[in-house]
Length: 255
Image 1 (tube, rainbow, N blue to C red):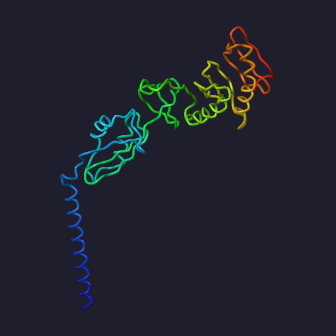
Image 2 (spheres, rainbow, N blue to C red):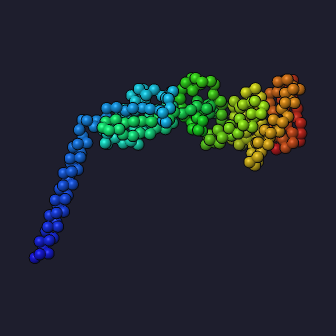
Image 3 (cartoon, one colour):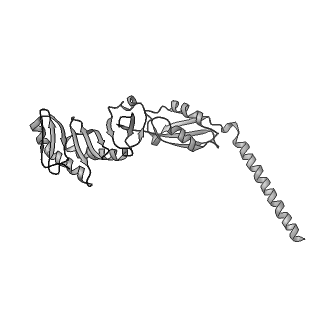
């Protein structure tokens, strides 16, 4: 009999506990639906306190707000982040709640580096492809022209940094870099000269070919007085060049 009484007490306590939880849950749900928790402000700021140059906070709020569902408690932050990241010029967005009815959105903008291929897309300094207005992208100056096979964007950006460093002794900079479908490298420098570097046979191939050009270029420039149009460095021990009124080669057969 005592065991039956204990069992009934246990069942009674369990039911009371469930009832209390149900009441608590209902109370929380009721509280969460109060008007004071309706989202009244979405503040858009630059990540790491940076200035937003191409993203207008008011415009981006108006664009993203209709796609945001719920209130302070129920809004899906991943969905909010995705809504903002779908806006042109936004590279990344992070979202956090601010009591009792605000969302803070931190925006990292794309930093344009170049146009990519001929399909109208832009390439960022991080090697990310994105679509935006070209005139806005070139507010600070004309962009570089980069191209390559699909998926090679980050490799091309990394090689651009190498080319800039390797050509620095000549005070020349690449303005166009192309990686062909056969993975051969061609670049155009800011003096108008095109340089054929070919494919990488090992990790030092391109660096060594540029080093040979850097060594001989001052002599070529002096003799040809700025008439050089292109230089082909795909020779093991020489080069071929084309200049206004002149074309020829120096060295052994190219590979």
